[in-house]
Amino acid sequence: MQIIMKAKYLIVTVALLALVCSLASAYDPSPLQDFCVAVKDPTSALFVNGKFCKDPKLASANDFFFSGLNVPADTSNPLGSNATDVYVDNLAGLNTLGISLGRIDFAPYGLNPLHIHPRGSEFVIVLEGTLYVGFVTSDEDAGNRLFTKTLYPGDVFVFPIGLIHFQLNVGKTNAVAFSGFNSQNPGHITIANAVFGSDPKINPNVLTKAFQVDKKLVEYLQKKF
Image 1 (cartoon, rainbow, N blue to C red):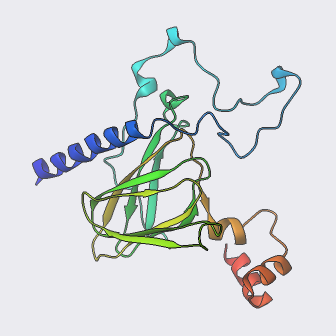
Image 2: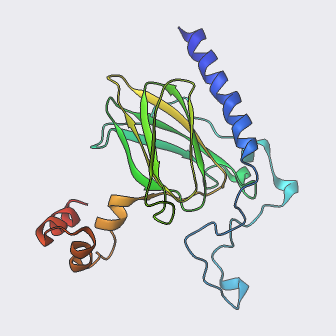
């Protein structure tokens, strides 16, 4: 069993490397954060579009190393899913390379809810379990079309940059998927959290009219998030 599992992880690793390389023509160095307000005095800057670079003479192998994607994440939460992201913040060597990756763990029937990555396209490779995945196009493209697919171990699916998407474990067992991005910092906006859990809260009248629902429902959802 251990030999089979090691072989499965090896296959996924090779596939990730191949696919990430194909995504290397990333959107970076386009915006790598939500905004970057200009300053006249560079000494007062907190960061640049990305990260400041270490002197190459001081770099080491550890700057390009991350350990832990073999460890399942805790999925004992209301959604039943959890992601282990490997972005530039925890793998410094990714800076300027335009790529990142991660692992997503799902409990039975766990959901990675509707979300977007504003700065990167994503692909997922299913390692274990069965996932129902999909994304929705912009309303300018024939009116919010939904593309869905049921994925099994070894299957790959791509989510275009900035589009709302999700992954749902439709099986009775745990599921595991690996993901790759064409950005060192693709960002992650969970739709429900952003809409109902913003700080400060969006005026309920705005959400009531936008969703065409009762104001009490909006206020309930804002309290929940």
